[in-house]
Image (cartoon, rainbow, N blue to C red; front, top):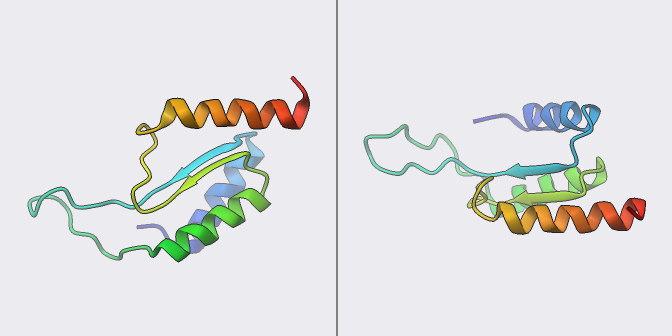
Amino acid sequence: GETKEEVMQVMDDMRSAGVDFITIGQYLQPTRKHAAIERFVTPEEFKAYEAIARAKGFLMVSASPLTRSSHHAGDDFARLKAARLAQTGR
């Protein structure tokens, strides 16, 4: 798992590259044969990451233990499109 500092650096790198959509989730061990979870990130930590990401300028943030980048991608991109339209008028 990444440290808080690593997550912050990735956010900064992404914003520097013009990325305005971020998903942050938790690895969950599918079976005992897969890699074990080293640490469970709390829902409060995910809420803090979401607030930080929004403060850094991300228009669309999905952050929770169960967030998957592909799970609600269509809905997330529709919300991102609406946020971009509200911000730029186009």
